[in-house]
Length: 44
Image (cartoon, rainbow, N blue to C red; front, side, top):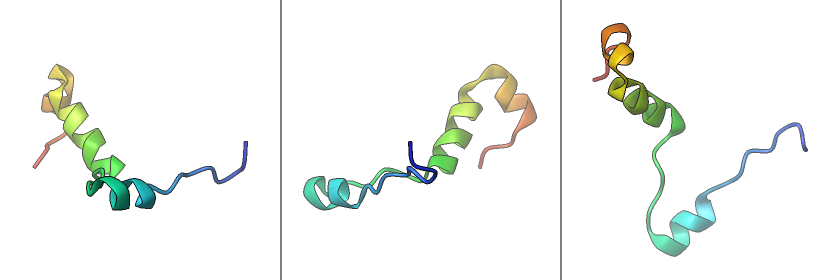
């Protein structure tokens, strides 16, 4: 596996007209759905 194996989502966005949100924002939302996450990490 290459050291830097990130994939570009540019082609997907161009073909389907939809771009996935940044992963950090998605992690914050997912943690916010956990019962312990609500008490520990504020999600705006």
